[in-house]
Length: 458
Image (cartoon, rainbow, N blue to C red):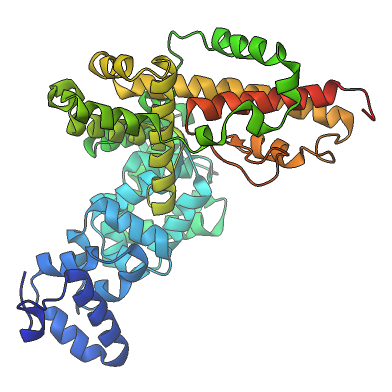
C-alpha cells in the first residue's frame, strides 16, 4: 500500500482503517486537503481504504475523487449494494449514478425481488432515481438493465390505446401509449427522446407477450445472474427446508409420554424439569469440534474445518435466498448465519442422540444441510403446536395472556419460538440452541395446554 508520510510508516504505522478514519475527519475540516491526499493513492488502494470502513462510513471517501467512477466501479458488487442499502439509495445517488451496469443489476436483483415476484414499488423507486441522471448516464443505465426486468415492470403499468401491425412490422406512436403512474409516463417519454428504436422494441415486447412469458424470462435471467455470483436460485434455495427421512413425531411423542407420566414434574417449575446447567450448555457443534481435535479426527478430510465452513456458507446462502433476507443488511446477514449455526448444531445433536462419536461419523457421511433440514422439521413441529395453542387461547378470551405464564406464552409465539427462562415464564427468553432447550420448549407447550384444559378458576 502507498505510504503517505512518515506518520504511516515504522513501528507506529497506522492501520488502513485508522488512515481512512483520519481522512474522513480531514474532509470535514479541509475538503481540498483531503481530496489531494486521497488523489495520491492508486484506485486499488483507494478501494482498500473504503472497504476498511463499515458501510455507513464509506460515502465521504467514495465522493472524494473529482471523478469517482473508477473507484465506485472497482468495489465488489456485494459491498456497493451493502453501502447503498445501509445509507439509502437517494442519499448515495451520486454513487449509484456512476455504478457499473453489473453493479446496478446486482442491486436490482437483490432489492426488487421477493422470491420469484418482482416488487414493482421498489423497482419504480429505483427508476425514479435513475431518471434524475443526465441523458448520458440514464441511457447507459437503462441499456444496461436487463430488458426482461424492464418489460416485466412495465407490463401492468402501460396502457396501449392504439397500435398497428403491417406485414408483421409493429408500429407504435408515443401518443398511443400511457403510463399508469407519473414515474412510468416520465420513463416512457425520456426513453423515447433518447432512443426511439429502443423504446419501440421494449414496448413491442411488452405488448406482444403475455405476463407469464415475460415473467418467466425475467426470472430465468435473474437466476442465471445469481448463479454467476455464487447465489442459489430461489427454486433451489427453498429445498433447504425440505423434510428428510426422520420421524420427528415419534421423537416428540416419546417425550410427551414421559412428561405426562410424571405429573409432579409437569407441575413443577422449569428448574425442576431441566437443570439450569443444561440451559447454559455449549452448542453441540462446538463440543463436537473440541472432541474432533482431541481425537485427531480433524485430520480426516471429511471433517476438515475448511470443508465444514464451506458447507455452512452454502447453507447460509440458501437460507438467505429462501428467507428473502436483504443481503445488504449486515445485521440480517449475521442473524441468518447465527440461525444456521444453531439449527445445524441442534439437528446434529438430535440425529446423533447427543453422542459425539455418532455425530463425528455423521459428518463423514452427511452434509451439514442434512442437519439443518432436520432442525427445520423440529421447529416446524414446534411452531405448529404453538399455533394450535394460540387458536385455543383466542377461544378462551385471553386466559394465558392474563395468567401467570403470559411471558412464556409470548416467548413461544415469536416467529422463531424462544425458550422461557424463569420458572414462572418471566423474561424474554433466549434462542433454542440445544436438545435440552428444544425438549424444554415442548414441556412449556404441554404446560400451557394443561393450563388451557384446567377448569376456570383452578
